[in-house]
Image: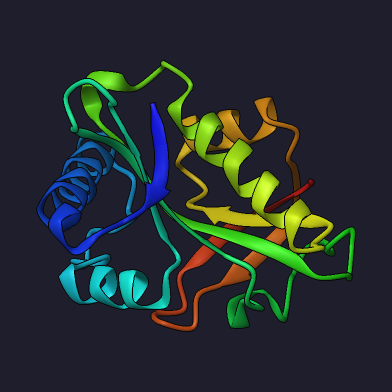
Length: 170
């Protein structure tokens, strides 16, 4: 398994992972990513900023999972409701996690989180923040399994959608 930055040549596979996640959410009646977000323009910006990452099968070259990982402050996290962030020092953020349906349940999202924690430590951040839809129970379980604590509720600036906010120490 290779963890690396997403390249332009990965775009089709990453967008496909997002589409498969979108279909899964729809089947599960989770109203997340049903408005076409994230899209190719999102991915182009993530690649340009150097904050899109993939897990690649070292034998086949196939992209098995993807995530956006950044140490830039997240505007949507400035205000948190029904709770509070535990740590105020610099933090990292993870967004747009998607795992190939053929590899769900194999711990790939946890591997992405582990790499995100390593990146945070290397750059002096003390915590990692992430949010998810309140009906996305599988993501919530993965986060709790990986040491994250539910901290409250945030609202996305893009569309005002309510999300459950989690934070974990690095």
